[in-house]
Structures are given as structure tokens and as C-alpha cells.
Length: 440
Image 1 (tube, rainbow, N blue to C red):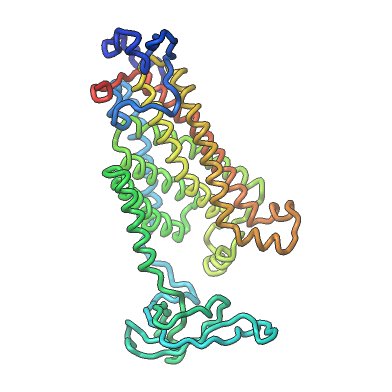
Image 2: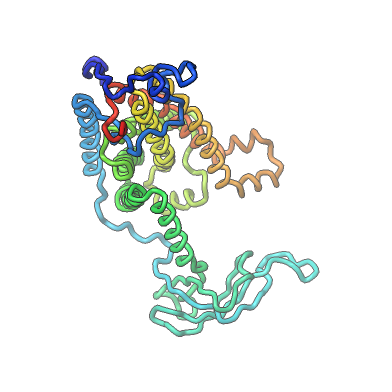
């Protein structure tokens, strides 16, 4: 969007107070004691109005046409990508060794036994469990079944606890049921309800819209992304289309169809393009194969046609998206708020103030990303520490190197989102004037 194509900045300042003393929070002038007051509103401390984005500013029609035109082109490209890569709908054959049918059962009796192969010193050692359970559902509902649970953490079963059993109808009767896991569905359900209530209580209608966007984002992953990857579609293209679709859904549903939302969307997709380029370059330079985990190795054995390096790239791209959305929406909103607070700010002043806000946001968000990855890999770090391996050798291993590339590439994209989104927002907002609601 070229600045020359946008209309000249309006000269009407009728909404500005005539008395300099009344302009202490909006324009140049003096306060009640004769002290100079800056044109630039303090970064991060704007409290004008109660709107959001376009509720605070009247965006010129020419600017709106530019924004919506670009957004429409990107939306059309995303739809074309979805159509071209849409999975065939054929269910893949079940993987050998994986159960597909599960039933609940209640523990009736628990006997602790030493785990097979575990060392026993002074009658102590790892304890496993022999369970007697009653089936609560399925073709054998009410049947009592004996199970051996050979797991180091299984000795704390309680009578009356509900567990999940896998079921294989083709097996011999004594081997049809096997322990699968503890039943956690109700706990997870109520935790999800608590999360939804917290979001709605604070965000109200916007919080509800954000939850709808989250649900649709998960639907995109489950209905499109995963089946398309199993169809052997190009993993990077699938990830790009997925990220674009989720960006449209998440940003517009949570923040409305506004110019501010469109600026945030363009900033997100621009930073995402840089993230994709860096991911491809550094995954190749580091010779990462995507074989960094046991589950990936097993997936390679049972489905050798999946491109594991492409799968790694897809994970990096989609994983970076959530933080990018947060960063770009915050930056666009901050710049629009600054313009609403003081419409005398030039593009350069809006950009500079927005960047100051962005620096603080980047510092906290990058730290969050690193700690999130470190927390997930904590057992791995403990294992490396227990084996007394050198730090360089640990970082050089594919598992850790993959997480380093994932974290740093995502963080670079996050940092790049700040100047890009701030510039787009400043260019858009500089021709806007505070709306009647913001001035009131």
C-alpha cells in the first residue's frame, strides 16, 4: 500500500480543545502550571474511549478499499489452497498394534507385585499391579476381568477408580481386554469449562468469539491438516494453508471485521512468510531429518511415505502462529489507540511509539516461548544431566537441535512481526480521525 495512493491528512481539528490547558492529554500545549506537554501520547498508557480498533477511528474509504482488497486476495488464495489440498476422505488403514475400541471399567481389587526385571534390594523395588476390574460398558458389561499392569507408576491404583481398557474382539477371550490408561475425561472436561468461563467472564462477547475461533482452528487441524498430511500432500504447503486459514478465523472472529484486524492479519502473514523461509533454510543447513522422537520413528516404520522433514517444517510453522497472532493484534491495537488519543501524531511518531510498546511485548513473549519449550523438554534435560554429557554434545543432538531451531526461528518471526505490523498500522491510522465515540 503506497502512501501516495492514500488521501491527504485532514486539516479539520475542530474536535481538538482550543484551550491549551484542556489539551494536556491530546495535543501540543501546556498544562495548568505552564509545563510543556508532548504531542506523543505515552506508549502503553492510552485509555481513550471504550472501543476497539475501528470503534475509535474513522478510517478513510480509500484506505479501507486497499486493506479489504489485499485481504480478499489472500482469502481467495487460502480457499484455493484448501480446495487443492483437501484430503480425499478415504480413511487410512488402521496401524498395527493400535487399539481402536475402548471401554471403561471400575477397579475392584489391587495387589502390588514386583515389576518383572526390576531389581529387588531388601524387599524393595519397583512395584506393579494386578487388578481385578468390573466392565462398565461394552459387550461384556458387568464381567470381572483380571489384568496385570506392568508399569513403574501403576502401584497407586485405588479401589473404585475408573480405568480405560482396550478391546480386541479378534483375540482369545482371556486376552481381549488390556489396560490402556486411567480415565481422565471428566477432569479434562471440567478444566475446559473453567477455562471457557474465565475467558467469557473477562472477555464477554469477544471472549466468546475467541472461543469460537479456537474451536474452528482445532476443526481446521482435525478436518483438513491431519487428513491432508496422511494423504501424502506436501507438508509445507498444508502448513501454510492451515496457518492462513486459522489466522483468518482467529483474528476476525475474536476482533471483528475491522481495519485493525486486517492490519493484524497482514502483519501475521508477513511474519509467517519470514518464519517459513527461515525454517526451510535452517532445517536444511542443520541437516535435521525429523527423526527426533520415538513417535516419529514409529510413524516412519508404519507409514514410510510421510515426509518427516516436511512434517517437522509444518510443526514449526503452525507452532509459531499462536504467538504471532497475539503480537500483531496487540501492535495494531496499540497504534490505533495512540492515534485516537492524539490525531496530530505523524506516521513516524505513531511508528516510534508503537515500537516502544512492541519492545516490551517482545521481551516477555520470547521468554515465554523459550520457557514453554524448555518446560516440555524438562525430562529430557534431566536425562542428559544424569548422563553427564557435555553441553555442546547435548545441543548437537537432533532432538535438542530441533527444539533450538524451532524456538529461535519462531522467535525471529515474532520479532519481525513488531516493526512490520506497527508500520502497517501507522500507515493506516495516520489518515484516520477519532470517531465520535472516542471523542465523547
